[in-house]
Image (cartoon, rainbow, N blue to C red; front, side, top):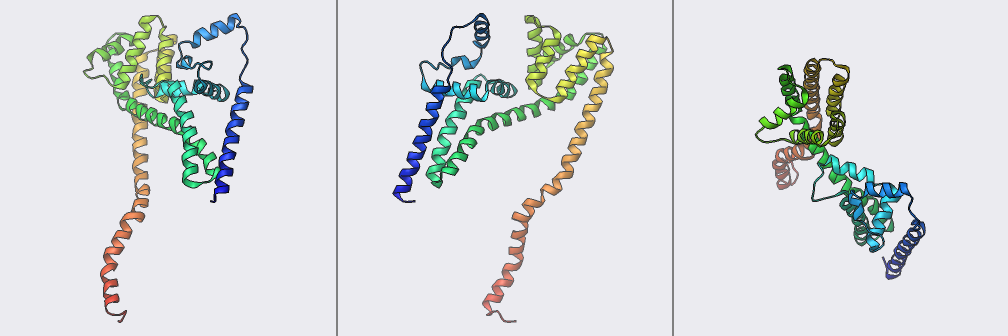
Length: 295
């Protein structure tokens, strides 16, 4: 690419950036007097990490807040952060800042490497998605660890409830007996603490299902709520649920084992078969080349 093309691309990028900030300044809502409902809404959102953004003092915060409001990212980022275990070192607003930062850096790197405005535009989307995928992978790993001890916990709860205790006491006994708390036991402990703080049992259980994001735990919570409301036997429900849970895990393991042979074909064709062919044919090719291709 000649110097004229580079200059034109730089001018194009600067023009697009200037146009973006112009529309941002135009589309940002003007300050207006707050009504009583606005004050209540702001009081509820004050506990959110997005309250740290101050668009009046920082252009960077203003850009992040504009993107969050325009794309309605706050609920999505808060959910991703919650499913990842709500780490204290990273907040939803930090995920937003990472998305915006990657969306700015990625096109610059792509343009320097490829020299193409099209690749730079595609890099904006890629950079904006990368933090989401990283946190979703953490959430998936956490959900896998949650399910590792879930069936055992259900069996223990059913056994303790069968002895005459209610399910909240059963959960409390499971937490106290555990030597090293798993992720599932930590979530159950949070649920018990929420009940002590004033949440109803139904609300605490629903919050447990929401924090984990696992369908099996949602079904487990639904069974407990249904038994609590209708007065049915929770022990029988939990035992049947545990049997069904183990059956589904077995089917999932058998399905994964059946797919293993198919997945192994790719590394076989790419790495193992070429190596075997080279080892088998290399002496023959060497002899043919050394003898002048004669027979």
